[in-house]
Structure formats: structure tokens, C-alpha cells
Length: 144
Image (cartoon, rainbow, N blue to C red; front, side, top):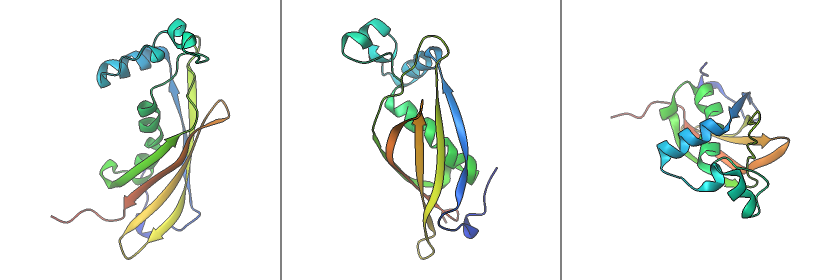
């Protein structure tokens, strides 16, 4: 799906998505990213340092959440910037894993710069896991 970014309006909602994560995905992400911190793979270790369970990598969570924008625009290269604050970890139990639920709303359309600001809402188990998650996308391809 892609949207005509020239015709979006503030308040417009993006179609939401749900992204699943399990322990196998955490291991694959750790291997790909090089982040082998045991809090993402070893339940006993995670609990020994005060966490409730193994937790998803923050950067995995951030990357999974931006999928709502790339699906909406139909062009991952349209993203100009993306920032967030990590507010709560995504707990990933051994049985069944976890889900993050992502939605978005257009906050600002700047016709002068051709940019659209989108605010994401990202939760897991009903808890907000990313705060102030803002993505800025351009409405037209960059000219060479």
C-alpha cells in the first residue's frame, strides 16, 4: 500500500500494524546486529539484573515500529528522520513471544518543505514502549 503524500492532512490516521517477536527472532537480530547482550536471550540473566523477562532490543523495536510508515508511504527512502524515546521494554516470554501494536497519525504537513510529520503510538501488552516517536517523510523524490 502507498499513499499520495501530496494529499494528506493533519489528523489523518495510518493503518495500524501488529508485529510479532519471539526468542528466535531476538537471536537472529542479535546475530545480525552484533548486539549479543544476554538480557535479550538469557532469561535467568535478564532476571538477575532486575528485568522481568528477556526483552527485545530497543533498536529492533524502533525498526519494527517504523514499518507502519514505510508500508503507508510505499517507499522506505521517503523517511527523512525518525526519533523516539524508549519508555518501557518489550518483554518476550519463552512461550508465545510478544506483539507490538503500532499506529500513526499525521501531525503536520509542511507544504513549503514538502515534508509530513507522523507521530507513532507503539505499545506491547497495553504498555507504551516508545514515546515521542516521530517520523518525517518527504512528499516527493529527491532530485539529483
